[in-house]
Length: 102
Image (tube, rainbow, N blue to C red; front, side, top):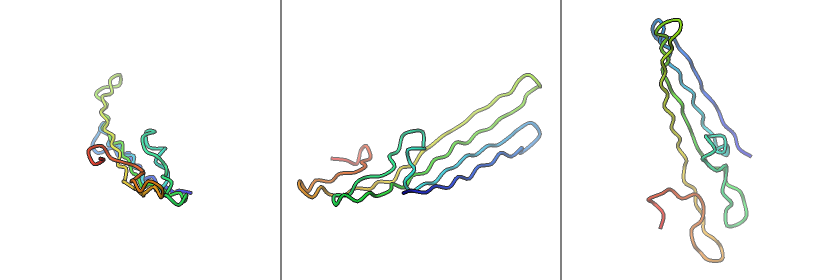
């Protein structure tokens, strides 16, 4: 079982310019983050361990005229590392981050 919390806002900073932010933090709901993060790993004992993860999508929207709207967005995801050892082979298993694995 996992849990998550969103925090979102859209604010008109100045006339015709809107700042948007959509944020999500979860422990066990990473599969809802762009489909990139696993929700959990299975420990060597067979017990599930929820995986902490977070994401953001931020942007600016500018209404240049009644018929023109310009926008830009940025998105990022953070996925924590959790690992355990296989009880048979004694090798590490779990979520690995590129550049840090053997």
